[in-house]
Length: 355
Image 1: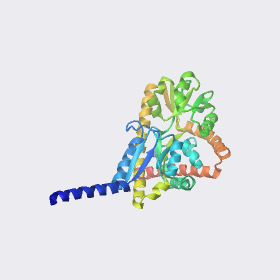
Image 2: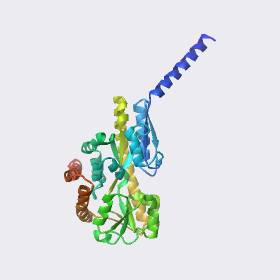
Image 3: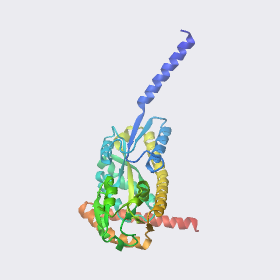
């Protein structure tokens, strides 16, 4: 064999060895969630795809992100438990109910009529205050908070077969399907409706057969499931702000070099910012189509939302303190911070653009 051929062979062997060492050194971050791997009908998939690209670039390929949607790796609680160990799953996305099963304090976020605007919700969930609120989850659960997705657009809309809801009085006598979440049950009962907890897979049948008169979800859900075929009326109440909490295994994160830990967190924060915009688009689109397809649609005005807030807040506070074991001080602290964020944003807008 000529010297040149020997040299080429040696280089090939060396490159192969280096590639094997890099592959062996690379860390995999497996993310599990329940949403379809579609770039068009939810905010989670495109944000996570963006995250995967950023992490790969910022770590030089030493952290590889693998995404498993549509519940491929199990339920939220199952994947959350796997993420606590950090071996099979390193990161999980958890709805508010699932998150509360790991970290009880999170249930305060289910407060009815908590937010008045998207800007207020984003400002709150993206704040240092909320990061501090979530920080004890590291010690309590072994999971670290990365950010909050606005599930389907966050704010929910009611749909039902009986009447168009324009005031609190219109809830009387309605039987509303809710998630198996005591906070939602307490809210519906405070408004004068009955509450029937059902898994999502049974909702269409329940609405068709009369087992339930209505339900509430983000407007994009009405679009995705053609709910106007089983319900006649829809009202954008915004009484619940649906969330998906992005958690990562603290044990796995601590195995990374510090610069890679920074890359994961910084990439997650950018991806959450992108997801906010996508979720708002989904909400606006879902509502526009809803108003075209339902027999009638309505957006609650501020005065009526205020009435409903005053009715539901005491019932929620009673349930979460007496039935769920969260202190009144913790509840009031979160409510106060949300109000502060809202007031600050309003003031900033006026001071910045009207001075």
